[in-house]
Image (cartoon, rainbow, N blue to C red; front, top):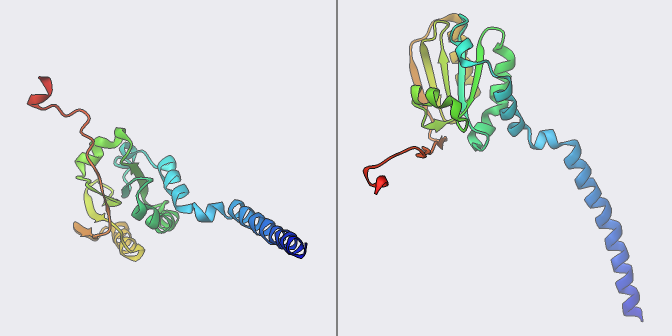
Length: 181
């Protein structure tokens, strides 16, 4: 009898502790979902709010072009820094974001030899490629290049970091001599 009483008391105390704890966790996830999923949200918004590349290369403004993917962890990690750069410079520079998973951007992916993401290309106002950043970059390094671009005082440079995601070619339309029998 005493054993049953202890077990019931334990179950009651357990419920008193667990139910509020689960409630707090659920409420926290709801209230702070933007914080937990901010990078993914930023990447999606980049693509939706992007300047069309054809317009960007013809409107006589420097252009920041980033190739990214929503699944890319390095892209997600860099998204808050890119967002702050965008806020600071969007009046002076076109910001173009092209998702490598969207086939309509394949011609740009080939044209700019994108084989790792994120890849950021900076162009002067005449559309000349000035800088290429591949992989994870420090915000300050890109900011310095943007500042120089705005002042129009840099020559071409390529900065490669070992932290990047390799793009896998989708050979859907590849035909080999053996594919026809």
